[in-house]
Length: 330
Image 1 (cartoon, rainbow, N blue to C red):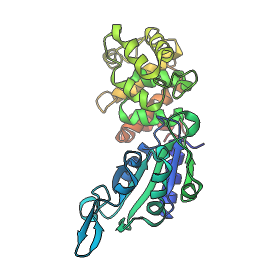
Image 2: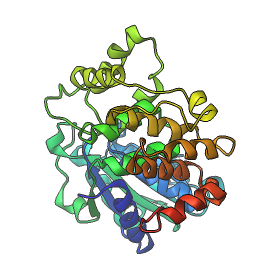
Image 3: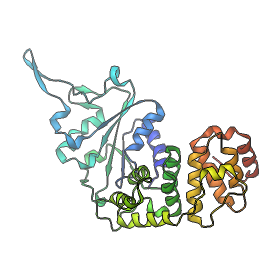
Image 4: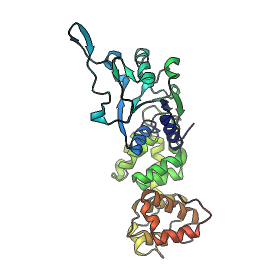
């Protein structure tokens, strides 16, 4: 099973070879978003098509009579070079949810890049994503004829990859601190009621509501990741002992450093979220103190520079790098 990071590298290699890929995995791990990220990184177009919402005849478009012949108008969801660019990715998302008739209708699209009379531009790459049958997510079996048209990559949730992504996207430090403290909570369907369970998609949503009123917070989070995980998350928050960013920056040599690992995980995430050129030197002075711990210092600095790479050009980062020559820092 691949992580998002390793799967992305494989997808790019298959793309370069012109081999369609089906990314498969449990709900909410980012297997669809992966393709949008690849398109963005390569500066090419991206079109998301949900075949499960269509009938097979929709792929050809509406018929019309021209002279004594019947032709089909081109559906607007197919890529057009003038409108969408010469290169791009067409993602057939949730393909595993399609019935056999639609699966059969997609054979020609995947293998020959054609839908009846309509030809997909040469620079557009077909890919697919879907859930696994064992995850009880409405996925059906894929016919062997369709399966053989793809290279298959199974993706699982990986705490390290998710935390790297969360750092660059500015997720709330409470969420990042909790997932550092309890990596097993990144994705779990054990005991799930199939409605609310922890997964990367839901943690991103939790990140948006962490500043909700305390009396609502547990219920709001429970609606996203389930009551059990929400209870653990709220208990984690109640046990936190965090100084304010203003106190850290204002008095880095004497500001309080929490003793519990859970609080330092959250503090590390908070500092990495708000570090900038104005306060970076003070934050570095604070986290260098022996009470903070070298592991937490390194974790904090790496998250900071992942989010804001320009800070690697500062004198305080250079000093940090020289002190930690034995480590791979990026």
